[in-house]
Image (cartoon, rainbow, N blue to C red; front, side):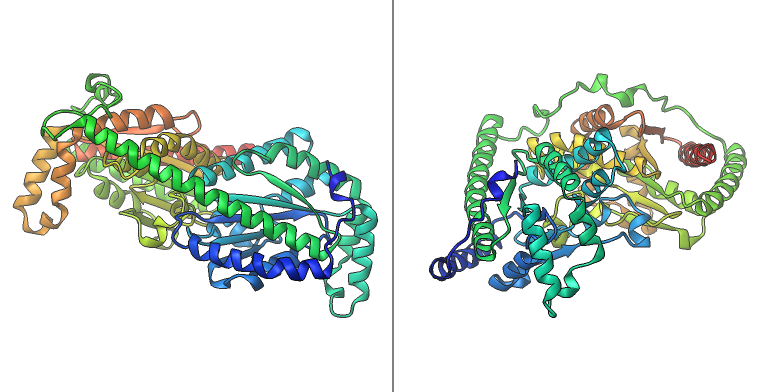
Length: 515
């Protein structure tokens, strides 16, 4: 695989001086166009130690406007990073749309190192690489340009490069004992690199292998790859936008004028088939039973949470449901027995400008708490397949692929050892109307009732179909939905807290079982 990158190719000084200025001007123009193109660029560098990765990144920052570039190089995870899933730090550092992200020692470092050192077998390597493929695919399908460059040196060339750097008083700091150790393990790293490239070079994110022996050849080749990829991707994105616009115009023409009562074809499941219709909405608790059950449940929650905190068990709670279903009331009862320093309630509204410039999951990744804490999402990433689907803020392709993206996201949380609970608070249309009327009548509750609540109510069948699909597609064995009958607020609150305590108890049991 790497033989074509060991040919000793170079570019003369004269040719470099002839090519470089025009190439730089092209890239500066493309960077300006990128600001309004609506997608980010993710440029990953990997390869042989000493092949010029750092120098190439420095050149890109020198040639282009650094204000539109995010440069990240990773080392041993910090305590803060170790307390979250591995990809948290990569999601956190993703460049916004219109910018370029340069990544060194990225998500490829761990699998290559562990494979070269024999710490994982082929199956372990493939599992890590498959996670990377899924990550890059999510970014690419959201529009990102993912470009990956493997800079290569033969073993002889690597030895010469390391020796040259070591002998230079200004560059000797770059060469460490680890570099020489890895030089002796050259064949192991090459095998690991070849396996990595073969498994992760996809249509969404291809690898380019570049010979790194001669600086001028390396620089012109990498910058030409970046230029060509930008030109190609800008054209592809422009065509996709035109196609989506044409599809929307065709759909609008087929639908015709709004009749006020017709249900559009976006409903995929008849109302009578909804999973919500299987709930017993007559369940209730009288006040005395509620007081006793709530006191018992909150006392147990307080006890279990303190134990979970001591064990470093993190909890993510997701609350979704109809407007006026009682999410806020349930959350307030749930946090009452907890120390305010140990939890955060994250209320999700329409994305900010900063959030709209990122993949929709980005804002949820960055809210993941540290070990032993509780994050409570009042509405969540499920907005992609609920409100964004029904209100057509996301097109069909975007919300349909979101089911798989969400399942992958949640599996990473659970695989890391986090407790994840997802609640859907259900009420009937009649109960919702009664609560709306109550809010309108009480001055201190009027702020809760908005015109949007009434508009959403008119789309009840559309939302019910979306909820049915959501539960069907994302209620997995490791992360099932907890459907809560919410016509009786007392019943709903107790059921939510009891589910939380059961999940914490199970997590503590698993922790003890691993000893």
